[in-house]
Amino acid sequence: MGVGGTLEYLTDLMGSGGHKHKKKKQLQTVELKVRMDCDGCELKVKKALSSLSGVKSVEINRKQQKVSVTGYVEPNKVLKKAKSTGKRVEIWPYVPYNLVAQPYMAQAYDKKAPPGYVRKVENTGTTGTMTRYEDPYTAMFSDENPNACSIM
Image 1 (cartoon, rainbow, N blue to C red):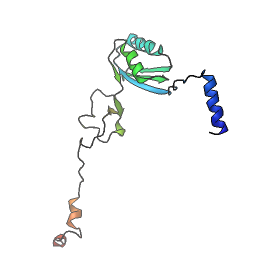
Image 2 (image 1 turned 135 degrees about the horizontal axis):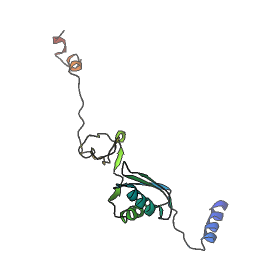
Image 3 (image 1 turned 90 degrees about the vertical axis):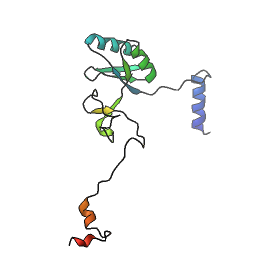
Image 4 (image 1 turned 180 degrees about the vertical axis):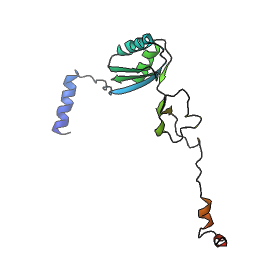
């Protein structure tokens, strides 16, 4: 351990009173899908989520039914607090359209998704098969085709 490491260790030891301190939470954004119909619903959800400790901001988009909570919070606690309002709540299930390989698959396509979004689908090897389209004209004139010169 160098001098810097020793000083850091002693500072941590003195600052926390000799006790190990909890790991600090990361600043993160938790996105939820919350069923809201009116200004009252929106205000109720915003007030409940703002009361959580560590919350820096709460942004609500009622048209998309989306709530974004930014702060030093845990997603499970935010979800639990949002559910305490009596609204139907789930973690935001959508991703932008261009991040999904096959957005019109049965699992990904959702009529209720906001414009430009599809459902988040885990990529498993069995969801679809890729087929390669071969142009029939290139095979006709290929060097590997023994009957290629029959046309000429």
